Image (cartoon, rainbow, N blue to C red; front, top):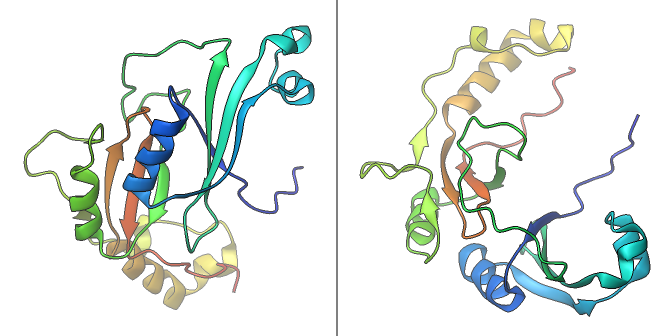
Length: 194
């Protein structure tokens, strides 16, 4: 079994590292903190699956952090070998991809306005009335805790149902085809083992 101690980073392959740094700075407020320009490293390339062709790998790697949280973005521009540019979007229910990356935000309406105004960024829906939406009223019977003690705790179930019912969120797709979610109103419910 894996002993996971936390989230390391989210990697996005990009076509232009400098443009990507600027884009994520404007979109998410991410702050660049490290860059490895034209990184030609045998260990990196072999670990990335290039085997004996490791010396053909030329990649620029930049790291950005989202202030006041633990999310790190890793941006990678492969100068060589060049990868395919996939020119289609996967749908919300399509498999074999990461569904989305969720960000907790405060002031979700302002976040929506900001994201919608960013160039090369679009909402998950083109409907003119698409906006942050609140989850409909949720009842304790709508979900189950795996832990039998938590499932039997009526007060905890009511509190959790109230929290779920207060969540507002929206989805958007960035210029690199990554789907993101911004959500507000969800906070740690606590360990449902009490």
